[in-house]
Amino acid sequence: MLHKFSVKKNAAVNDKNDQLVSGLLSAINSFASDIGWSDGVSMIRSGSIEARYSQGNYVFGILIVDYYKPGIADSESALDGFARDITEKFESVYSNELEEAQRTNRYDVTLFEGFGKHIDEVIYANNNQIAEIYQQQILVQSIYSNVPQEMILPLLARLKSGENILDELPDLILKYPVMLKAIERTNMDHKVIWEIFKVPMLKKGS
Image 1 (cartoon, rainbow, N blue to C red):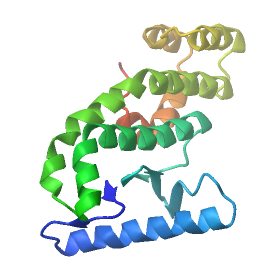
Image 2: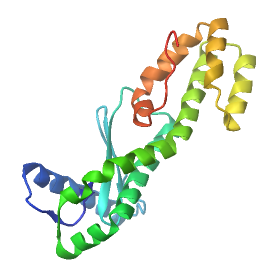
Image 3: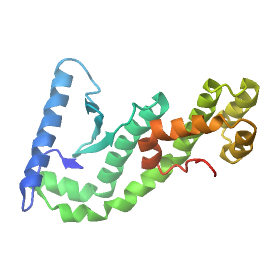
């Protein structure tokens, strides 16, 4: 989290760097607004590193991700939502502290040290959605691996209706071992997403 306006109490070198980043993000969003991008800018990418950020009333919430490969469309939306949800939760939990910080133009970061538990709350609130995306990716990759569509499409339909089909996949793997490659590819290509949202991954022998 980076405060948009205030100066930290007992600012050190890292704090000054935070202030520089915060100023940069503010400038980028001001520029975006000036040229007519009403929603501002929500991501900066350099090589495999992506910084997704959400602008709140008082802070920027920044999610930094090191990608092996770019995310899939549904997970991209979830990551954007995650950055937004974290920012909203932070400003909700610490509304009084942030209001006072803006008034005095100073704040003490030790006031926010207990926020970690709230991050876990947001992660688990999104867990079911990401778990569904994970299972969907395995099934789609299985079709590309030549598993018969008549075996996969009914599972995709059930998944879309809200069922969790993960426990059924081991039996299907026994019939079509090529699915192991689909699982390994899904695990590797988007590993960072599954890890962020604590999604249980299938592995060889499980």
